[in-house]
Image (cartoon, rainbow, N blue to C red; front, side):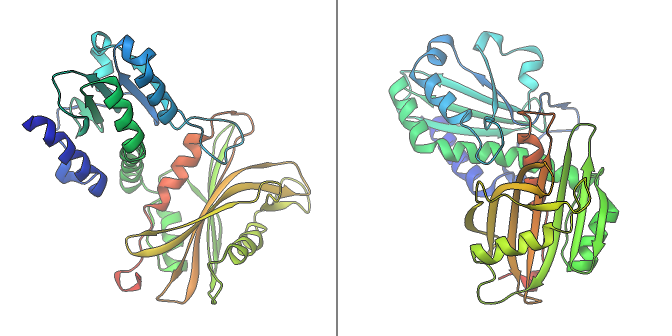
Length: 336
């Protein structure tokens, strides 16, 4: 029972601290590079578990559709292997979830370990005395487990941006807005204006881009109507492919709004779809806005994807842009 209770403690710690190095497995430099693609997950479970209620619960949790994408895409691409098949390169995958039901156990719980056989790697373990206990545990703690897996993917993206940066884009954001931001190599500066920076990463069949803009705040600055109006105003600076065309926000599916705090600062998220006025283009976007208390201005990071030839593979492109938001840093004295 001692080791089993430790699982529960480690899970709680991981939820609190995310990818904090204090909870990573100590490892030398000899670990192999983790295998697999972003948001690909290996589930280790025997056949009865996978074809029964536990498997149903896991699939409902892990492959639920991501909102505000043009086509249906799951949270994770799940690949299931049996315990006997968990060998060779599979054990070195970046994301692993082990599922075990053992009547000798007294209660259900979970544990998390990092960089066990490869790096960067996360290994989650779920254990329960019965299938009923396992499904009940997933119902109660499923969202927390998703948060841990998402945090692992985010940590990898942030670490890459910190190590392999695009100095020209980072310099423009810092000089225009007094805000630090890590942007990975490959992004090119498309516009650099007093209150507006636009950067993009062009692929043969897709495009990732983000805007950073700022404007004076008023008492309604973080309201839905004000943020939507500001987005339409600044997005119009992105030209479309034909004369007189420009980016706007889709009114067919109005954006969704949520408020949250990150490191003590209040942010407002808008998530929806963008269109091009006077042309036929569009895709998903997400924006994050806050009031910079040092300047009294609204600061917004707005990210979008255009990938008409890649249905339904827009999840990772959007997630990559969302991860960049977590590299943004304000001067200490400016935080609320």
